[in-house]
Image 1 (tube, rainbow, N blue to C red):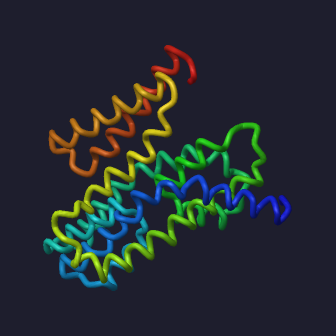
Image 2 (cartoon, rainbow, N blue to C red; image 1 turned 90 degrees about the vertical axis):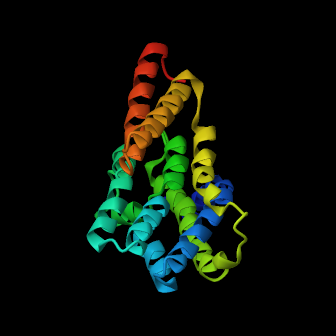
Length: 234
């Protein structure tokens, strides 16, 4: 196990890597707090969704279903469908965390988000110290978790006072844009981004609904892999 000073340094590095992404996460959290209240589900439901589900887009989808009178099963299926992309993230991270205990991997799974994944997968590699990975991940992931909970609570109290012409909903695409732009490296990355985005939009237009995100992810990965075979890694 690395020394305490090394673990602290890696934890701080994770915080630094994820901190710029909060520009989109915080307003997104306000929406996650305000939406259940606006739908008549109450503030406790907002806190429950943020602590138990802890997944922004799927939270909003489930809240919409419940707020419109849908059943809990339909809300759960909507959330699970959107979160299918986390299966891809987990498979990608698994080789890097295979030495960790089951308890540690379960903790990582709970804290896994788009932002924590992006920060970690771009830092880890075949030659880095495996013992430094979890502290780095926890630094970014716990910052996100804490910011999300605080933003949700703030959204419960102030969300309804925000004027309608303030586009808090724009935080949703902003979150993913802050992840996308730094991750595009070389032609293969650009091809993956363009094809994945186009596939997601097309799937949504033809009625793909929640599966549009997964369709975009799969198409982007496939296109990036083909481009890398054609042109080589970035």
